Length: 248
Image (cartoon, rainbow, N blue to C red):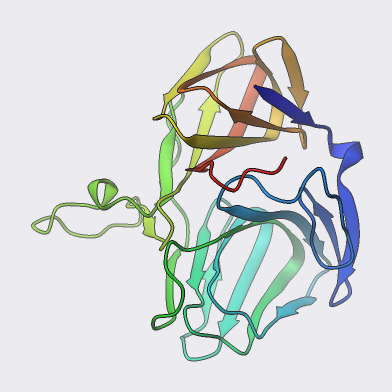
């Protein structure tokens, strides 16, 4: 089953003064039909003015992944060193038993970013932070893993950790991206009992009989294979997570 969320249908809230476009119920936005997608609890698109700070907390038992579309971000998370993220970079925080303060400050040209909130498989534990300031240029074609809670997606112990390696999260989920040239496709295979949530970052794509433009998204459940065809050059992000709590 495919359920499409058009950008115009997303919830709109102001959190700490920052406007958010929310795919699922979040803060003051409540939509019983769009509570979550499996272990993906929240997905918010945010735009910050130059120097503006998006501040949240306290937060516990949640993995927050921040992926930068445009501009620059610097991070400040209680107990961890500050980091600066470039376009296409990823910042991951597993809040574990609790983090009282998390901040993301926009650079001189502002920032546009997506935040994915995943429910971990087990609550508690020590908080952790992992950052990829930027990933290597994405090759045209299939999906690349940016973050994963699957041990088999980690580099072998004998390999060096590089900026191209996925960050580790505490949910058995994946966050991926793909750059698909016009007229070509990207295919992703998963297992039964999973939920997929795809968001179009740029361009236009087709999934099944549905066309999605930039900012649109689609939840796919009950399928083990998904094929995305680019109607024009496109960049997409894809979350793969357990479907047991799918509400959308």
